[in-house]
Length: 173
Image 1 (spheres, rainbow, N blue to C red):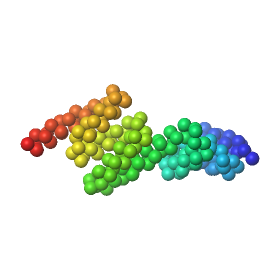
Image 2: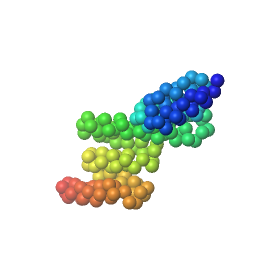
Image 3: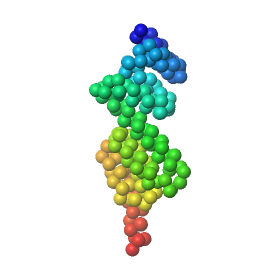
């Protein structure tokens, strides 16, 4: 049994915007052919689109384990791991400033895993600024501006953090 019929039903469900139903069909396809890395990968994408990052990551890792040479699977794992780290960092930041250093560490790791996710740079810079680590905040925004020179938020925050850094230095004299 190949799971091709179930895969077709999953695609039909996606086209109809029935993502939970698509998940069920992908799972049925996997039951038919559990060693098919592509089924796990596609289920991972569907879970990720539904915001179920933990489930998405589990299936992305399974796909990668089944076909380690497939580059798309590695990218999916790294992207999802970065999203997971960002979520953890956001929860830490919401729980109080005493967790800022750990949140910054998670965000730095997320940037290394997925260096194209611009929102992570912004959050990392804001975390550094909250910690009064203005040099790191400024450097993070400059890294982002290398990726996207027209990033408005990064430009605005860069000016703000440069001024905050100047004020900080003035206050410490």
